[in-house]
Image (cartoon, rainbow over all chains, first blue to last red; front, side):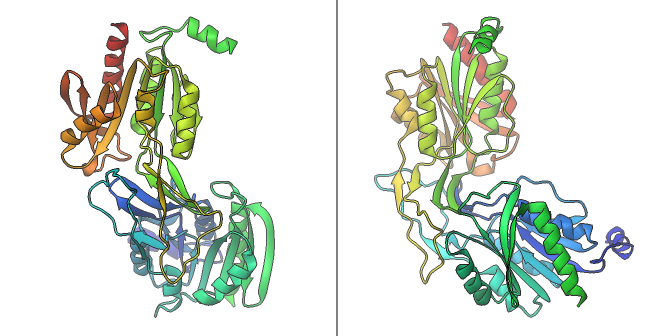
Length: 224
Length: 224
Protein backbone atom coordinates (compact mmCIF):
# COMPACT_ATOMS: atom_id res chain seq x y z
CA UNK A 1 0.00 0.00 0.00
CA UNK A 2 0.94 3.64 -0.28
CA UNK A 3 2.13 4.18 3.29
CA UNK A 4 4.36 1.14 3.03
CA UNK A 5 5.74 2.23 -0.36
CA UNK A 6 6.51 5.67 1.02
CA UNK A 7 8.14 4.14 4.10
CA UNK A 8 10.21 1.79 1.93
CA UNK A 9 11.30 4.67 -0.29
CA UNK A 10 12.72 6.50 2.69
CA UNK A 11 14.05 3.39 4.43
CA UNK A 12 17.62 3.58 5.54
CA UNK A 13 20.07 0.79 6.21
CA UNK A 14 22.13 -1.58 4.09
CA UNK A 15 19.10 -3.70 3.09
CA UNK A 16 16.86 -0.80 2.02
CA UNK A 17 14.99 -1.82 -1.14
CA UNK A 18 15.53 -5.54 -0.46
CA UNK A 19 12.76 -8.02 0.25
CA UNK A 20 13.60 -10.90 2.58
CA UNK A 21 11.36 -13.85 3.46
CA UNK A 22 11.67 -15.41 6.92
CA UNK A 23 9.80 -18.47 8.24
CA UNK A 24 9.65 -19.15 11.96
CA UNK A 25 8.02 -21.29 14.61
CA UNK A 26 6.55 -24.77 14.48
CA UNK A 27 3.70 -26.13 12.40
CA UNK A 28 0.70 -27.94 13.86
CA UNK A 29 -0.67 -30.93 11.98
CA UNK A 30 -4.21 -31.87 13.11
CA UNK A 31 -4.95 -35.46 14.13
CA UNK A 32 -8.59 -34.63 14.87
CA UNK A 33 -10.42 -31.51 16.15
CA UNK A 34 -8.71 -31.72 19.57
CA UNK A 35 -5.30 -33.28 18.92
CA UNK A 36 -2.34 -32.36 16.75
CA UNK A 37 1.32 -33.16 16.13
CA UNK A 38 3.69 -30.25 16.75
CA UNK A 39 7.37 -29.49 16.47
CA UNK A 40 9.22 -27.99 19.41
CA UNK A 41 10.02 -24.44 18.33
CA UNK A 42 9.39 -21.21 20.19
CA UNK A 43 9.97 -19.10 17.05
CA UNK A 44 12.42 -16.88 18.96
CA UNK A 45 15.42 -17.37 16.63
CA UNK A 46 13.36 -16.68 13.50
CA UNK A 47 11.63 -13.65 15.03
CA UNK A 48 15.04 -12.28 16.12
CA UNK A 49 16.30 -12.63 12.52
CA UNK A 50 13.18 -10.92 11.13
CA UNK A 51 13.69 -8.06 13.60
CA UNK A 52 17.37 -7.69 12.66
CA UNK A 53 16.55 -7.70 8.93
CA UNK A 54 13.91 -4.99 9.40
CA UNK A 55 16.35 -2.96 11.48
CA UNK A 56 18.79 -3.21 8.55
CA UNK A 57 16.17 -1.63 6.28
CA UNK A 58 14.81 -4.72 4.51
CA UNK A 59 11.16 -5.28 3.71
CA UNK A 60 10.52 -8.47 5.70
CA UNK A 61 7.78 -11.05 5.13
CA UNK A 62 7.60 -13.26 8.21
CA UNK A 63 5.59 -16.46 7.76
CA UNK A 64 4.98 -17.67 11.31
CA UNK A 65 3.58 -20.89 12.72
CA UNK A 66 1.66 -20.89 16.04
CA UNK A 67 3.86 -19.01 18.52
CA UNK A 68 3.29 -16.68 21.46
CA UNK A 69 5.51 -13.82 20.26
CA UNK A 70 4.84 -10.19 19.37
CA UNK A 71 5.45 -9.09 15.78
CA UNK A 72 8.82 -7.33 15.43
CA UNK A 73 8.61 -3.67 14.47
CA UNK A 74 8.37 -3.02 10.74
CA UNK A 75 7.78 -6.69 9.82
CA UNK A 76 4.89 -8.04 7.69
CA UNK A 77 3.63 -11.12 9.50
CA UNK A 78 1.56 -13.91 7.95
CA UNK A 79 0.26 -16.43 10.52
CA UNK A 80 -0.21 -20.06 9.50
CA UNK A 81 -0.87 -23.34 11.31
CA UNK A 82 0.03 -26.30 9.08
CA UNK A 83 2.97 -27.06 6.79
CA UNK A 84 0.65 -26.88 3.78
CA UNK A 85 -0.50 -23.39 4.82
CA UNK A 86 3.12 -22.36 5.33
CA UNK A 87 4.09 -23.62 1.85
CA UNK A 88 1.25 -21.61 0.28
CA UNK A 89 2.12 -18.46 2.24
CA UNK A 90 5.81 -18.75 1.28
CA UNK A 91 4.90 -19.02 -2.42
CA UNK A 92 2.73 -15.88 -2.17
CA UNK A 93 5.59 -13.78 -0.76
CA UNK A 94 7.87 -14.36 -3.77
CA UNK A 95 9.89 -12.82 -5.33
CA UNK A 96 12.41 -12.20 -2.55
CA UNK A 97 16.12 -11.34 -2.62
CA UNK A 98 16.86 -13.70 0.23
CA UNK A 99 15.01 -16.27 2.32
CA UNK A 100 15.87 -17.40 5.83
CA UNK A 101 13.92 -20.59 6.50
CA UNK A 102 14.01 -21.03 10.27
CA UNK A 103 10.62 -22.69 10.82
CA UNK A 104 10.54 -26.23 12.16
CA UNK A 105 8.17 -27.60 9.53
CA UNK A 106 6.45 -30.92 10.15
CA UNK A 107 7.79 -33.66 7.85
CA UNK A 108 4.47 -35.49 8.06
CA UNK A 109 0.84 -34.68 8.36
CA UNK A 110 -1.91 -36.96 9.58
CA UNK A 111 -4.91 -38.13 7.60
CA UNK A 112 -6.99 -36.05 10.01
CA UNK A 113 -10.36 -37.17 11.37
CA UNK A 114 -13.20 -34.61 11.35
CA UNK A 115 -14.67 -35.92 14.65
CA UNK A 116 -12.77 -36.50 17.86
CA UNK A 117 -11.22 -39.97 17.95
CA UNK A 118 -12.66 -41.91 20.90
CA UNK A 119 -10.65 -44.04 23.25
CA UNK A 120 -11.35 -47.58 22.21
CA UNK A 121 -10.03 -51.03 23.01
CA UNK A 122 -6.79 -50.31 21.14
CA UNK A 123 -4.93 -47.07 20.44
CA UNK A 124 -5.62 -45.82 16.91
CA UNK A 125 -3.02 -46.24 14.19
CA UNK A 126 -2.01 -42.80 12.98
CA UNK A 127 -1.71 -42.75 9.22
CA UNK A 128 1.08 -40.31 8.32
CA UNK A 129 1.53 -38.64 4.94
CA UNK A 130 4.73 -36.87 3.91
CA UNK A 131 4.49 -33.08 3.60
CA UNK A 132 5.95 -31.22 0.65
CA UNK A 133 9.49 -30.03 1.48
CA UNK A 134 9.18 -26.23 1.52
CA UNK A 135 12.93 -25.56 1.62
CA UNK A 136 13.87 -28.00 -1.14
CA UNK A 137 10.94 -26.73 -3.19
CA UNK A 138 12.12 -23.14 -2.88
CA UNK A 139 15.63 -24.20 -3.97
CA UNK A 140 14.30 -25.30 -7.38
CA UNK A 141 11.56 -22.66 -7.68
CA UNK A 142 11.58 -20.44 -10.82
CA UNK A 143 11.67 -17.49 -8.41
CA UNK A 144 14.35 -18.97 -6.13
CA UNK A 145 15.76 -16.20 -3.92
CA UNK A 146 19.34 -15.27 -4.81
CA UNK A 147 20.41 -16.24 -1.27
CA UNK A 148 18.64 -19.22 0.28
CA UNK A 149 19.39 -20.09 3.90
CA UNK A 150 18.09 -23.17 5.70
CA UNK A 151 18.13 -24.16 9.36
CA UNK A 152 18.67 -27.67 10.69
CA UNK A 153 17.91 -28.89 14.19
CA UNK A 154 19.75 -32.14 14.76
CA UNK A 155 20.75 -34.51 17.56
CA UNK A 156 24.12 -36.28 17.35
CA UNK A 157 26.65 -36.18 14.46
CA UNK A 158 25.44 -32.62 13.95
CA UNK A 159 27.90 -31.50 11.29
CA UNK A 160 27.81 -34.68 9.21
CA UNK A 161 24.02 -34.54 9.07
CA UNK A 162 24.05 -30.80 8.36
CA UNK A 163 26.54 -31.10 5.47
CA UNK A 164 24.43 -33.81 3.89
CA UNK A 165 21.32 -31.71 4.41
CA UNK A 166 22.87 -28.61 2.82
CA UNK A 167 23.68 -30.58 -0.32
CA UNK A 168 20.37 -32.43 -0.41
CA UNK A 169 18.25 -29.33 0.04
CA UNK A 170 20.11 -27.22 -2.54
CA UNK A 171 20.49 -24.24 -0.21
CA UNK A 172 23.36 -21.73 -0.17
CA UNK A 173 23.87 -21.69 3.58
CA UNK A 174 22.74 -24.01 6.31
CA UNK A 175 22.62 -22.95 9.95
CA UNK A 176 22.93 -26.09 12.08
CA UNK A 177 22.07 -26.26 15.76
CA UNK A 178 22.31 -29.15 18.15
CA UNK A 179 18.98 -29.54 19.92
CA UNK A 180 20.15 -32.32 22.25
CA UNK A 181 20.87 -29.76 24.99
CA UNK A 182 17.45 -28.15 25.19
CA UNK A 183 17.71 -24.84 23.34
CA UNK A 184 13.95 -24.77 22.78
CA UNK A 185 12.32 -21.69 24.22
CA UNK A 186 15.58 -20.35 25.66
CA UNK A 187 17.23 -17.06 24.71
CA UNK A 188 20.54 -18.61 23.62
CA UNK A 189 21.75 -21.03 20.98
CA UNK A 190 24.92 -22.62 19.59
CA UNK A 191 25.04 -22.78 15.82
CA UNK A 192 27.41 -23.67 13.00
CA UNK A 193 27.20 -21.89 9.64
CA UNK A 194 27.78 -24.17 6.65
CA UNK A 195 28.50 -22.50 3.31
CA UNK A 196 30.21 -23.57 0.06
CA UNK A 197 33.47 -22.33 1.65
CA UNK A 198 33.24 -24.56 4.70
CA UNK A 199 31.95 -24.69 8.25
CA UNK A 200 32.15 -21.99 10.93
CA UNK A 201 31.53 -22.64 14.62
CA UNK A 202 29.79 -19.53 15.95
CA UNK A 203 29.96 -20.72 19.56
CA UNK A 204 27.34 -20.14 22.23
CA UNK A 205 25.52 -16.82 21.79
CA UNK A 206 22.17 -15.18 22.35
CA UNK A 207 19.57 -15.64 19.63
CA UNK A 208 19.68 -11.85 19.10
CA UNK A 209 23.48 -11.92 18.60
CA UNK A 210 23.18 -14.83 16.15
CA UNK A 211 20.51 -12.87 14.27
CA UNK A 212 22.74 -9.79 14.03
CA UNK A 213 25.73 -11.81 12.83
CA UNK A 214 23.67 -13.65 10.22
CA UNK A 215 22.14 -10.42 8.94
CA UNK A 216 25.61 -8.82 8.67
CA UNK A 217 26.63 -11.76 6.46
CA UNK A 218 23.47 -11.42 4.37
CA UNK A 219 24.27 -7.71 3.87
CA UNK A 220 27.82 -8.55 2.69
CA UNK A 221 26.64 -11.27 0.32
CA UNK A 222 23.79 -9.33 -1.27
CA UNK A 223 26.20 -6.38 -1.81
CA UNK A 224 28.66 -8.51 -3.80
CA UNK B 1 4.88 -23.24 55.46
CA UNK B 2 4.22 -20.74 58.24
CA UNK B 3 3.38 -17.73 56.04
CA UNK B 4 0.87 -19.82 54.11
CA UNK B 5 -0.66 -21.21 57.29
CA UNK B 6 -0.99 -17.72 58.70
CA UNK B 7 -2.49 -16.43 55.44
CA UNK B 8 -4.93 -19.37 55.35
CA UNK B 9 -5.93 -18.73 58.94
CA UNK B 10 -6.94 -15.19 58.11
CA UNK B 11 -8.39 -16.03 54.69
CA UNK B 12 -11.86 -14.77 54.08
CA UNK B 13 -14.51 -16.03 51.74
CA UNK B 14 -16.84 -19.00 51.66
CA UNK B 15 -14.06 -21.47 50.78
CA UNK B 16 -11.61 -20.39 53.49
CA UNK B 17 -9.97 -23.50 54.95
CA UNK B 18 -10.81 -25.60 51.90
CA UNK B 19 -8.23 -27.13 49.55
CA UNK B 20 -9.23 -27.43 45.89
CA UNK B 21 -7.25 -29.12 43.13
CA UNK B 22 -7.56 -27.78 39.57
CA UNK B 23 -5.92 -29.20 36.44
CA UNK B 24 -5.68 -27.07 33.30
CA UNK B 25 -4.14 -26.88 29.85
CA UNK B 26 -3.00 -29.58 27.45
CA UNK B 27 -0.39 -32.26 27.86
CA UNK B 28 2.49 -32.80 25.45
CA UNK B 29 3.53 -36.36 24.65
CA UNK B 30 7.01 -36.56 23.04
CA UNK B 31 7.45 -38.45 19.76
CA UNK B 32 11.19 -37.69 19.68
CA UNK B 33 13.34 -34.75 20.89
CA UNK B 34 11.76 -32.33 18.37
CA UNK B 35 8.18 -33.59 17.88
CA UNK B 36 5.23 -34.18 20.17
CA UNK B 37 1.50 -34.84 20.19
CA UNK B 38 -0.56 -32.13 21.88
CA UNK B 39 -4.15 -31.44 22.76
CA UNK B 40 -5.74 -28.16 21.80
CA UNK B 41 -6.26 -26.32 25.07
CA UNK B 42 -5.27 -22.78 26.00
CA UNK B 43 -5.78 -23.44 29.72
CA UNK B 44 -7.94 -20.30 30.00
CA UNK B 45 -11.05 -22.00 31.42
CA UNK B 46 -9.06 -23.90 34.07
CA UNK B 47 -7.02 -20.84 35.04
CA UNK B 48 -10.24 -18.80 35.35
CA UNK B 49 -11.67 -21.44 37.69
CA UNK B 50 -8.48 -21.51 39.78
CA UNK B 51 -8.62 -17.70 40.05
CA UNK B 52 -12.29 -17.76 41.10
CA UNK B 53 -11.62 -20.46 43.73
CA UNK B 54 -8.74 -18.46 45.21
CA UNK B 55 -10.90 -15.33 45.23
CA UNK B 56 -13.47 -17.33 47.23
CA UNK B 57 -10.81 -18.06 49.85
CA UNK B 58 -9.81 -21.62 48.89
CA UNK B 59 -6.26 -22.91 48.95
CA UNK B 60 -5.83 -23.83 45.29
CA UNK B 61 -3.36 -26.31 43.78
CA UNK B 62 -3.25 -25.73 40.02
CA UNK B 63 -1.56 -28.51 38.03
CA UNK B 64 -0.92 -26.92 34.63
CA UNK B 65 0.23 -28.36 31.32
CA UNK B 66 2.29 -26.21 28.88
CA UNK B 67 0.36 -22.93 28.51
CA UNK B 68 1.27 -19.27 28.03
CA UNK B 69 -0.72 -17.87 30.98
CA UNK B 70 0.23 -15.99 34.14
CA UNK B 71 -0.42 -17.69 37.49
CA UNK B 72 -3.63 -16.36 39.09
CA UNK B 73 -3.13 -14.47 42.34
CA UNK B 74 -2.98 -16.65 45.43
CA UNK B 75 -2.78 -19.93 43.50
CA UNK B 76 -0.10 -22.66 43.99
CA UNK B 77 0.95 -23.69 40.48
CA UNK B 78 2.69 -26.96 39.54
CA UNK B 79 3.86 -27.04 35.89
CA UNK B 80 3.95 -30.38 34.06
CA UNK B 81 4.37 -31.49 30.45
CA UNK B 82 3.14 -35.06 29.98
CA UNK B 83 0.05 -36.92 31.18
CA UNK B 84 2.25 -39.13 33.38
CA UNK B 85 3.75 -36.04 35.04
CA UNK B 86 0.27 -34.62 35.54
CA UNK B 87 -0.96 -37.85 37.17
CA UNK B 88 1.98 -37.81 39.59
CA UNK B 89 1.47 -34.12 40.44
CA UNK B 90 -2.26 -34.65 41.04
CA UNK B 91 -1.53 -37.51 43.45
CA UNK B 92 0.92 -35.33 45.40
CA UNK B 93 -1.69 -32.58 45.96
CA UNK B 94 -4.13 -34.89 47.80
CA UNK B 95 -6.04 -34.71 50.05
CA UNK B 96 -8.38 -32.07 48.60
CA UNK B 97 -11.99 -31.17 49.38
CA UNK B 98 -12.84 -30.77 45.71
CA UNK B 99 -11.14 -31.30 42.37
CA UNK B 100 -11.96 -29.56 39.10
CA UNK B 101 -10.26 -31.52 36.33
CA UNK B 102 -10.25 -29.18 33.34
CA UNK B 103 -7.00 -30.28 31.66
CA UNK B 104 -7.19 -31.87 28.22
CA UNK B 105 -5.07 -34.89 29.04
CA UNK B 106 -3.63 -36.97 26.21
CA UNK B 107 -5.31 -40.38 25.96
CA UNK B 108 -2.17 -41.83 24.41
CA UNK B 109 1.54 -41.40 24.62
CA UNK B 110 4.10 -42.42 22.04
CA UNK B 111 6.88 -44.92 22.53
CA UNK B 112 9.25 -41.96 22.19
CA UNK B 113 12.56 -42.10 20.32
CA UNK B 114 15.62 -40.56 22.01
CA UNK B 115 17.10 -39.31 18.70
CA UNK B 116 15.28 -37.27 16.06
CA UNK B 117 13.43 -39.52 13.64
CA UNK B 118 14.78 -38.93 10.12
CA UNK B 119 12.66 -38.60 7.04
CA UNK B 120 12.99 -41.90 5.26
CA UNK B 121 11.39 -43.66 2.34
CA UNK B 122 8.18 -44.20 4.30
CA UNK B 123 6.61 -42.21 7.14
CA UNK B 124 7.25 -43.88 10.51
CA UNK B 125 4.51 -45.82 12.22
CA UNK B 126 3.79 -44.16 15.55
CA UNK B 127 3.35 -46.73 18.25
CA UNK B 128 0.79 -45.38 20.72
CA UNK B 129 0.34 -46.54 24.30
CA UNK B 130 -2.72 -45.70 26.40
CA UNK B 131 -2.14 -43.28 29.27
CA UNK B 132 -3.56 -43.90 32.73
CA UNK B 133 -6.94 -42.14 33.11
CA UNK B 134 -6.27 -39.45 35.74
CA UNK B 135 -9.94 -38.56 36.26
CA UNK B 136 -11.22 -42.12 36.56
CA UNK B 137 -8.28 -42.95 38.81
CA UNK B 138 -9.11 -40.08 41.14
CA UNK B 139 -12.74 -41.25 41.31
CA UNK B 140 -11.67 -44.55 42.91
CA UNK B 141 -8.71 -43.15 44.87
CA UNK B 142 -8.65 -43.77 48.67
CA UNK B 143 -8.36 -39.98 49.03
CA UNK B 144 -11.07 -39.19 46.47
CA UNK B 145 -12.14 -35.55 46.90
CA UNK B 146 -15.65 -35.16 48.28
CA UNK B 147 -16.67 -33.27 45.13
CA UNK B 148 -15.10 -34.46 41.87
CA UNK B 149 -15.78 -32.47 38.72
CA UNK B 150 -14.69 -33.51 35.23
CA UNK B 151 -14.68 -31.63 31.94
CA UNK B 152 -15.47 -33.13 28.54
CA UNK B 153 -14.70 -31.61 25.17
CA UNK B 154 -16.78 -33.35 22.54
CA UNK B 155 -17.87 -32.97 18.93
CA UNK B 156 -21.40 -34.04 17.94
CA UNK B 157 -24.02 -35.76 20.16
CA UNK B 158 -22.50 -33.73 22.98
CA UNK B 159 -24.97 -34.56 25.74
CA UNK B 160 -25.24 -38.28 24.98
CA UNK B 161 -21.46 -38.63 25.07
CA UNK B 162 -21.19 -36.48 28.19
CA UNK B 163 -23.82 -38.48 30.11
CA UNK B 164 -22.03 -41.70 29.30
CA UNK B 165 -18.72 -40.14 30.28
CA UNK B 166 -20.06 -38.91 33.63
CA UNK B 167 -21.18 -42.45 34.52
CA UNK B 168 -18.06 -44.14 33.17
CA UNK B 169 -15.64 -41.81 34.95
CA UNK B 170 -17.40 -41.96 38.32
CA UNK B 171 -17.43 -38.17 38.76
CA UNK B 172 -20.04 -36.10 40.60
CA UNK B 173 -20.40 -33.39 37.98
CA UNK B 174 -19.37 -33.23 34.36
CA UNK B 175 -19.01 -29.95 32.51
CA UNK B 176 -19.49 -30.63 28.80
CA UNK B 177 -18.53 -28.27 26.04
CA UNK B 178 -18.91 -28.61 22.31
CA UNK B 179 -15.57 -27.98 20.67
CA UNK B 180 -16.89 -28.20 17.12
CA UNK B 181 -17.25 -24.38 16.97
CA UNK B 182 -13.70 -23.39 17.81
CA UNK B 183 -13.72 -22.35 21.48
CA UNK B 184 -10.00 -23.05 21.80
CA UNK B 185 -8.04 -20.01 22.89
CA UNK B 186 -11.11 -17.76 22.93
CA UNK B 187 -12.50 -15.94 25.96
CA UNK B 188 -15.96 -17.51 25.75
CA UNK B 189 -17.49 -20.93 25.98
CA UNK B 190 -20.86 -22.73 25.97
CA UNK B 191 -21.15 -25.49 28.54
CA UNK B 192 -23.71 -27.86 30.00
CA UNK B 193 -23.48 -28.99 33.61
CA UNK B 194 -24.39 -32.64 34.18
CA UNK B 195 -25.10 -33.74 37.75
CA UNK B 196 -27.01 -36.61 39.36
CA UNK B 197 -30.07 -34.31 39.23
CA UNK B 198 -29.93 -33.77 35.48
CA UNK B 199 -28.51 -31.49 32.81
CA UNK B 200 -28.36 -27.68 32.81
CA UNK B 201 -27.64 -25.61 29.72
CA UNK B 202 -25.59 -22.66 30.88
CA UNK B 203 -25.72 -20.94 27.50
CA UNK B 204 -22.94 -18.91 25.90
CA UNK B 205 -20.85 -17.05 28.48
CA UNK B 206 -17.35 -15.81 29.11
CA UNK B 207 -14.90 -18.28 30.64
CA UNK B 208 -14.68 -15.97 33.67
CA UNK B 209 -18.49 -16.02 34.11
CA UNK B 210 -18.58 -19.81 33.81
CA UNK B 211 -15.82 -20.01 36.43
CA UNK B 212 -17.76 -17.77 38.84
CA UNK B 213 -20.98 -19.77 38.38
CA UNK B 214 -19.20 -23.09 38.88
CA UNK B 215 -17.44 -21.85 42.00
CA UNK B 216 -20.75 -20.58 43.44
CA UNK B 217 -22.13 -24.11 42.99
CA UNK B 218 -19.05 -25.63 44.61
CA UNK B 219 -19.52 -23.29 47.59
CA UNK B 220 -23.19 -24.37 47.96
CA UNK B 221 -22.35 -28.05 47.69
CA UNK B 222 -19.41 -28.08 50.11
CA UNK B 223 -21.56 -26.14 52.64
CA UNK B 224 -24.27 -28.83 52.63
